[in-house]
Image (tube, rainbow, N blue to C red):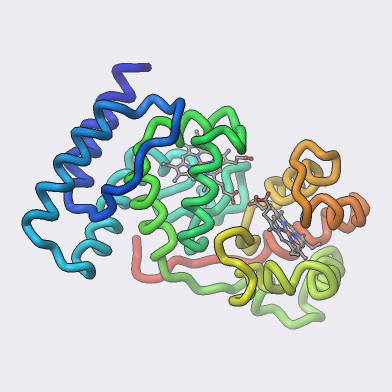
Length: 248
Ligand code: HEC
Ligand code: HEC
């Protein structure tokens, strides 16, 4: 395992050389030490070559794509859609999520404030710079919504129609009725819900409801819903289809 982690980091040393932010230190207690320093030296060398900020941003996307392909694609897909239409598994969709949200989540898994058997391991296996890069990759994908989002009210399945009504009443002002979050809600902390696997949404809501995940906003909201209402909002949001534009 140790060896495997080192080799992943070495690949990053090459792939991430042109990225700009060298100010961040790895979080205490994480296994990144020598690899990070070597990477930082590489980055300093790249800065000495005077990259413009636009080039830096596209380098982050390019490095993020490589890392996503190596580490994340098996579960989330390189396009972030988590497999067939995004509705088949428990890995959430990452496509076009806000960059701040992805960074915040990955750092939470890394620090241990959010624990998950697979994601904690993944977030500790990659560097802080990789976190910035993969977030740049997934957040930068352009998308189009269809499915439930473009169906008329009377074309929706009954469950989805009830779910939409509930979303308008209770979820829309933070997550957006279409699940893409409202612009003035903090993009750093409110996740996108559209197109997420139905099972994943239900699992999350039940976790807030039972207290397995405690969150000042979501726990009371989840507790106010019946299991049927949770299933309905999950049917509404998961039935919004996401297509990625200009990427195959
Ligand atoms: C082995 C499968 C697997 C791999 C590999 C993996 N993930 Fe995950 N990821 C998951 C699962 C499952 C969840 C849901 C975790 C939970 O319920 O807390 C998740 C959750 C996440 C979340 C939180 C999303 C949200 O809306 O809360 C982010 C962000 C994320 N992954 C990013 C990544 C990135 C970036 C990579 C690659 C560096 C990656 N994951 C690699 C399976 C994986
Ligand atoms: C006051 C704002 C607010 C409202 C209203 C709200 N949410 Fe949330 N929701 C949040 C925030 C903030 C998070 C991130 C919580 C965390 O970090 O665990 C979240 C997380 C979630 C998640 C977990 C997603 C993930 O990928 O981890 C689901 C599912 C969810 N909300 C569903 C709903 C539904 C369904 C409703 C309406 C019934 C709703 N929320 C209403 C703010 C809100």
